[in-house]
Structure formats: structure tokens, C-alpha cells
Image (tube, rainbow, N blue to C red; front, side):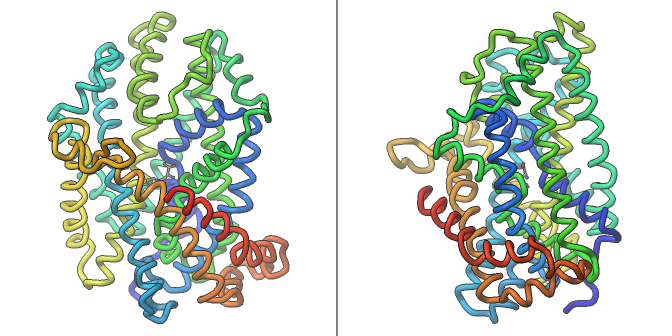
Amino acid sequence: MSTSREHFSSKIGFILAAAGSAVGIGNLVGFPVAATKNGGGAFLLIYAFFVAFICLPIMLAEMGLGRRTQHSPYSAYAELGQNTKRWRIAGWLATITPFMIAVFYMVITVWIFGYLFQTLAGNLDAIAQPTYFGEFVNDYSFIAYLVAVTVIINFILVGGVRKGIERASKILMPTLFLMLILLVIFVLTLDNAMAGVKFYLIPDFSKITGSVINGALAQAFFSLSLGMGILITYGSYFRRNDDIVNSGKLVAITDTAVAFTAGLMTLPAIFAIYPETNPESLSDSSVSMIFSFFPQIFMQLSNTVGYGFASVAASVFFLLAFVAAITSLVSIIEVPTSSFMEKRNVSRSKALLVMGIAITILTLLAATSFGLLPWVSNVVTYAGIDKSLFDIIVDVFYDTILPLNGLLICLFVRYRWKRENFTAELSKGNSNYPNTFLHKYVNFAIGTFIPVILAIVFINTV
Ligand code: PFF
């Protein structure tokens, strides 16, 4: 085990960093809209069930594996998999996936940054125009925003684990919680807000179908940043005797609480501004919600509270989304960066330079999918649909490889690393763990039905 590896300085540092990774755009927009459309409280229950019974065990497996090996995914799989080819492939997949997901997330983050910039500049009226987003994605100002976002991320990551990731999380996460709570309080004071709360919370079990259940699982899995190598890498920065089990629980609870709270901001705002809203008609796409629908809501809000105040609320919203996205991006870019540092034995700044250049180029290509460069807008056509580079990344990595990575982690931990070793790792810092129900459940579930469920999801998508 390398002794020079950096570690988080405290348990709370780890929890905030991992929660920073987990709390992202998926929580702020994806979750509330999915919950509203799919049975409100009924969806919430199913989601919470998946977080506790499917995602938490995988989370503990990733964190335990990272801490045991003190490596990022590639070397973690190589070491405990005794360098066999099949586990090296799993390690490789767990390294390339975050790289590709970082590209797609980066595109959205850069747009958010652009919208934040516009709202701060007092241009809420412009971004609320229905045609604005279409023009915005085809504008070369994207490059300037991309450079700014890249600089901010590298500024955090170059500081390393303690002075970079941990310090930034300790500042940004409390700021995020505060902004979210302020927005919720503000929204709940608007007329008709309670109609939105009702719609959000009242359970409607008739809406629960197979595809809703599948969607809830995918949302929970993505929201907890599973299958991306992030928790293996952050786990490797966890100190020897820190309590993985309780930290994992706290991260899962924080992430779910933020997603739930975001619903108390989003739905009441929609109902207050458009009292006749039919939740069925809300867009499924987080992208169109953030960049088309929300600016219009803020613009409408100016009729009630004035343009200045509506602009401030819009700026706080985009800042909130930006902070959530940045802390997620930091965690995901750390995975290939630390793998590169380990594999090539290079310094953090060199690894970041290489990753920065590679991700920037791919982000530019993915962003140009929306029209800047026609040749990446239609890379392939399958099932009769033209697919851009952006779509391909989402289809292949987000929809398909993520559950596969989760499946591989379960099989690896249970059948290769073996459950006694896994239990021993989780018991460091939590000596009572072997006596708990959670321990029995995790050891059983991770070797049986969780991989089966993930295999079904994977095969269905393929
Ligand atoms: N948990 C994040 C979210 O809900 O948005 C998922 C994530 C996506 C993390 C992309 C990191 C990332 F780069």
C-alpha cells in the first residue's frame, strides 16, 4: 500500500465531498419532475426503498474496495483481481466511464454557467425567450464559458484531496444547502404554492408501472454517483479507521434529502406561476426544464415580485445548479486523473493538464453536436434515429455501462474479494458492524438479487 497517498482530514470532509458528488443536476431537476409525473409520494417511497436496499450496499462495496486497496478503480481491480484480464477490463470500464460521463455533464454545466452569467448581467428577459436556448447552444460564446468552467475545476483539483476537494466541499456544500433552503422558503410564500406541494407529495399508486420502477432505480443509482468509480476513488482517500458504514448512510440520506427538498422548490414554483399546470405535460428532459421552462417561470415571476427580485431569484437558482454540478464534476474528473497519476507515476498537475485537454476537446465536440459543427450532430443512425456524439455518450455510458459497472462491482466484491474481507474492511471504524442486520443483508444482497436486477436493467437497455 502506498504510504504517500493523500487522505481526507476528517470524516465530515469525506461526507461533504461524497455528498458533493452525489448532489447534482439529477437531484435539483430530474428527481422532482420524475416524482411529480410518476405518482408523487408513491414514487418517493419506491425511490427511498431503492436507495436503502439496492444502492447503499453497492455504495459500501465501492467505498470498501477503495479503502482496502488505496487505489483508484483500475489498480483496485487489478490488485484484488490478481491482474487477470477480465478484472482488468472491469477496471478499465470503471475508468473510461467517468471520463465519458464527465464530458456530457460538462456540456450541461457550461450551459448553466452561461445562464448564470446572463442572469447576473440582468438578461433574464433574454434567456426567457422561447428561441433563446436554440441560439445559445449554437453560439461560440460556449468556448469562453468552457474555459472558465475548466479553470474553476482545475483550481479545485490541483489542490489535491485536502486542500482542493475537501476544502472546496466544506465551503460549497453548506452554501448549496443554504441557497436551496432560501429558495424553498421564498417559493412557498407564493400564492398557490401549496397546490404544487400537494401534487408532489400525494401518493398515486396507479401511476406505478414497470418502467416507472425501472426509472426510479436508474435515478437513484445515478444520483448516488454509483458505477462511476467515484466512490472507489474517494474511498481510497478515506483514513484507515474512519467509519465507512455510517458515512455511506449519511451520504445516501443527504443526497435523498436534497432531492426531496428540491421538489419543494420546483413544484410549488411551477404551480404558483402556472396554476393550471398539468404535471403530466412537464418535460421529461432536465435540459429543457433548466434552460427553457425555468427561465420562463422566473420571467413570469417578475410580474409578481418585480424584475429585479426575479433576476436575483434566477441568479440564485443558476448558482445553486452550478455549485451542485461543479462538485459532481470535480469528483468525476478526479477518477481518471488519479488513475493516470498512479499508472504513469506523474504529478497531479501533469495528470490534470492531460485530462483537462482531453475533456475540453471532447466537450467541444459533444457541444457542437447541437449544430455548431454539423458532422458531429449525426455520427451514426440507429433504430432510424440520428444520433449525435452527445446522444451516444448518454445512450452508451449513462444508460448502459453504468448498471454494468454496478453489476461488476457486486460480483467482484462478493466472489473475488470475498465477503469475509469485505466485512473486515467495513468493520474497521465500526466494530459493531458484523452484528448488525445491515451486515447480513448487504452480504446476502450483493451476491444474489442486486446483481440479477442490474443484469436485467443492462440487458433491457442493450
Ligand atoms: N449524482 C450526480 C447527479 O445526480 O447529478 C451524478 C453525477 C453525474 C456525478 C455526473 C458526477 C458527474 F460528473
